[in-house]
Image (tube, rainbow, N blue to C red; front, side):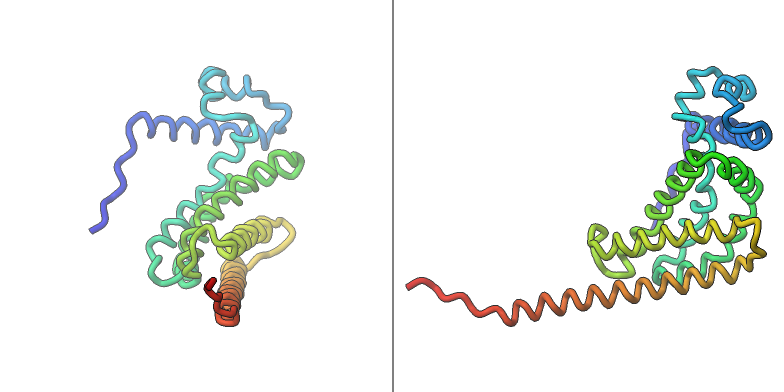
Length: 226
């Protein structure tokens, strides 16, 4: 029997709602008037909060833009967990349509971020770092389980990093204004790439284990002192 997660407290729900409210207002202002033109003071006025409250929730204006950038990844994480026993690649395929739908639900905010990021490298870096970290966090336990290796094993780190980087590349493809993207096709190609990457990691792990075993077998027995 699995226990459900505890309900968030009223204070936590209010914190989440406030952050979402400020971030939504900020995205629109930044996109319409320019990131540099909108000050933190302006954001506090528009959001109806104090400067102290603003900085207790956000470290910077870049942090405001990055807020909510991972909303679709929460849905991906839930899908992967629901299909955990199927293996990572099968779980990705089973979760793909739901994740694509989630991306569509957040499309307007993603477009606003792209407008802001296009002229502000610091903002782009903050958003990409947030997504990279979350992609890594989401994938790590599943990759480790799929490879049957400890989470701290180098091959798990390499494969998880590869998945996270591939996720960012998929973001770029899906958000490109210059390309008419077959989203479902692009996602399937990405999953196929992940499958190949994991196959390579498994082969490397097998070679490493075989080499270690061969080294042990070839080592001459130690002679005891007489």
